[in-house]
View: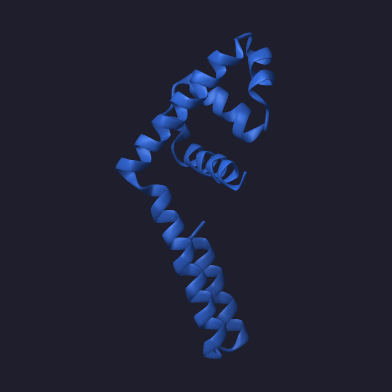
Length: 114
């Protein structure tokens, strides 16, 4: 179950980064599945397609997104930057930096990692 949830979350993140590179049909199915949380059957009904056709389009779109990530590594870079930002904030907390400066530095870090 956890693997399925992680897979869906990862696909959603890939869609956030690379969704504009998909064709219209793939983008529509991805949006309905990952953003609107519709089931494959619900998407099929809404689009007037078979469930199998929707499943095929979804998997093809996810494979395309994974291919983009393999080449560009934007999601991996984003995740690494988030980890580094967390470490930086922990250092700020433990370094005893006075409050107004600590908050300003943390806000800058948050902006960088958005």
